[in-house]
Image (tube, rainbow, N blue to C red; front, side, top):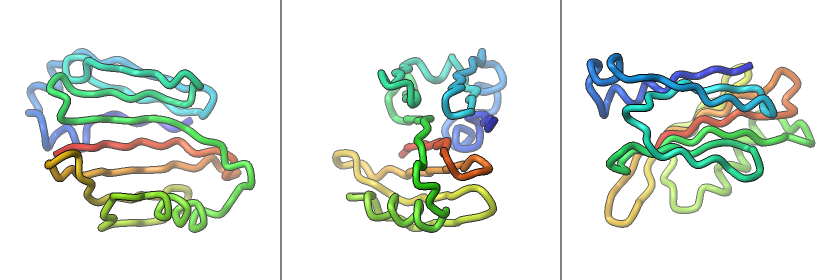
Length: 141
């Protein structure tokens, strides 16, 4: 099971004191085999996908969005091919960084949200047999 703590990018937005003082909650998705710890004091909007694929969270001010979801890789495509499909579908995104390593993919760059240039960071973690992916994505100014 993949487990991530929504902390790395949040450190750029919030003080360490705010993060350590926060109450934390866990979102688990047994269907795709991942869980996410997130600070309740910072994320107040949690929308679960009706399909059970994942969750979207926003900060109180709406400036930071975090998405955690999964998808099946029915054809068990290799990582490079999955990355290529994601890059082909990244309309409106300016990809400035991409990396494949062992069982994960990272894609990052910029996208416009209205007049605001936002940074996106997307990490995909594959199951050992490549049959499913857990995706963690942060979008922030």
